[in-house]
Image (tube, rainbow, N blue to C red; front, side):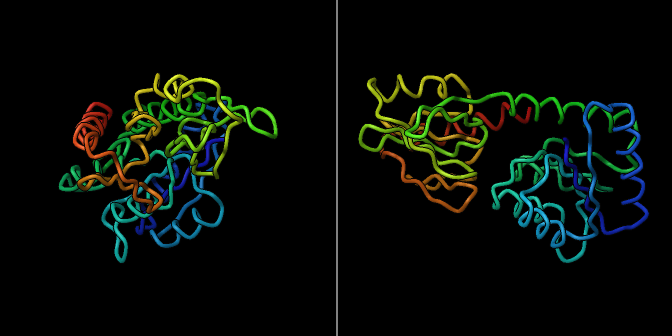
Length: 244
């Protein structure tokens, strides 16, 4: 099921966007989409926090109290990895939309053809992310972990510790080097080896200050002094390539 949230303070615009989504889901019945509508960012955030978030967010930018940009920032702070599409009557906020890793930025009035094309791209990206996983041998048996949920992996003793958006997972004792054990992660361009026994997922890093990587759940991770500058460069390059 594809769970979609629309947020717009203008009731007329909210209805028009919902009608476009209904038409889209009608011609894409395999998606089995479910749409919820909100007239304010705080209402949406409360819902996302209570029930685990949505796959796709269609957000107006110019809203009172909490703008679409601020709503997006707070969703990312909650650890929400859903794709965000912004709708706006002004092109003054394109740069801000990059701060929340928005998938696309559409100017109103939204044309059906362009809207459908953007939604197809967002769904394709979601499908790719959902299909990427690693199987970890744990004391309780094999555990399949989606790569998009992994914030970082570190070696603790002889085990691999996976810090994930839905909880932590510890592997059984490994018999190889950390780099070899993390090879399936490092084959994905989202992951970066920091030092000898620590891997970070660029998608969960919101900023880099000196030797500190700031994560989307509020954690601050200290980077090795010699690796910090190169990590910051690689993190910036990753997002420039993803958004280009």
